[in-house]
Amino acid sequence: MKRFGILLVAFLCLGLVSGVAWGQETIIDEELRDGQLPDGWSEVDIVFETGAGGYARFTTIDALITTPVIDLTGYTNVQLTFDVAKWGGGDDGPLTVEISDDGGNTWDAQMFDSPTPPDSDYLTSGPTDITVTGDQVQIRWIRENSPSEKRLRDITLTGDLEGVVATPTFDPPAGTYYNPIDVEISTATENATIFYSFDSDEGPWSEYTDPLAIDQDTTIWAYAEADDLDDSGVAEATYTIEDVVEVADIATLREGAQDGTVYRLTGEAILTFQSASRNAKYIQDASAAILIDDAPGTITTEYDIYDGITNITGTLSEFQDMLQFVPVTDPGDATSINNVVEPEVISLADITDDHQAMLIQVYDVEFDATGNFDSGQTYNISDPSGDGSFRTQYFDVTI
Image (cartoon, rainbow, N blue to C red):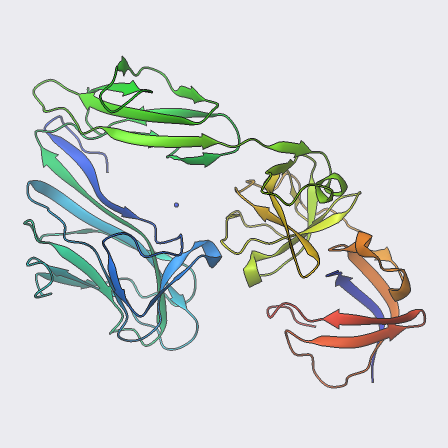
């Protein structure tokens, strides 16, 4: 029988072009983060993951992913950039990029290897000059030179068009936001004048001079003009501003509806535990605790245990009777560090739903089983007050 004097647990109840003669254009911009094959692309043995920020996983030595046919006629200074990381074990190796100039009949127009990632940290390949031209260009990524599985994401292909103003870009980019935002519009072409419209891609147009304040669902169209150059194409960005219900503490948050309502926890919560599994984070304040379930990796800021986090925003859901806070945006840097959270000392018999996700301490715990712990298992435990269950939920925790 395993015997522990103290059991301390978290209770589980994403180059400027000089001069005015060229306009830089984004030809391809595919993040591969949303779990789906992009329209017009093709793949063999690729699995699209949403965890850990999302990526395309090359599952076999024959795995590959291919762009649609690209027309590079008239482009110069074409450059390709992407991020690659290792997935799982096995010997290291690169992804290989092959480029066709005949619509995919042959793949020897240009070829190069990515950097070789030794682990799950992403390495950026490029920008690499693409020398292939014409209207039948395709690019593919293959794994034939890598014994280990690979992750691929954030593919960008850019180029310059002679005699054309660069199409404007928006910052922040189009998307869903949970606060009013100020949108800046810019073009890589020097001395160009930008025009925007809230009505349509045909105007009416207003000259852009200052950032645009957006506090409701809005679509912005923009183009740019410059002397002696053709006008740019019209860019479009749609912004959705979600309604957010603010709550001051976790206890109030736990009372919220599980109907897609977006809540913002305005009070600071302390991180008491985290795992790479579904990017789980356990947070608590003086009122209660809750599990953050973040399978897509929405929270990209890295935190240390006992960091304070403020303005966590998300929706509520439940899985196997466990209330979960699912983030919809990254709350940003920690608002405090090295906090102290004293676990509540409690007996097994006194544990209730109010302790869900909370850091607690139980004395005189005995395990029925002997030997080493395995992950993903449930063990029968007891203390002088009664019986309970102990779940080794997370594979990256050493007990």
